[in-house]
Image (cartoon, rainbow, N blue to C red):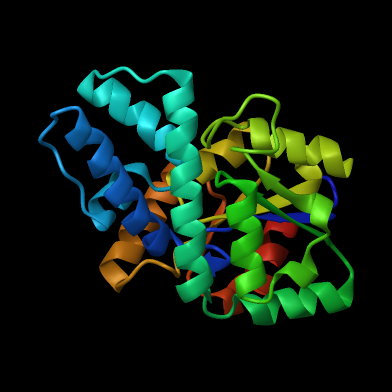
Length: 244
């Protein structure tokens, strides 16, 4: 395979422990949307996360529309997306923490200067920027190497659409085969794999051994070449990808 020159990181629950925080805020707004349309279904944060992990809120709302058969005007959708963004950013700024061990590995990568580093997320760009800044990771990534499927593209989308990975590769001037992605979700893994990027699946943010084993099977099924349970394993897992 081509020489690996860039590492592309998902953000939520890969670099920053933000997914649970975000989905609590998302669930409140999703329930508001459903309630205003006399739909009785209600979600907790964990339920919404289990069903839609890896998608941004735009993707969640579009899925809810399909599941429950209610219309939204483009203006209404954009209004809800903007409201969710504000609520989630406020929560992450107050409570966000780095994934265990992530900053130590980023320190080493940044010091070695062997690989280019980028963030490729489904989440809104302001949320991603706020997340990595909150946990002190913004110094590792050039400002123009932080990408959002919700914001960076001409037409907003969400993973598993590969568009954001293809856009990121084009922007940094690399072929997909010269990159490695680190992803924690099925949709994120599918996005990278469909773009032609080998994936290290990260399960360390999932609680409990049984859930981690379950997600290992899910990520492998989506095409992840190798699994990482803790960030301490990253150098070894990257080396395995490079040798394959």
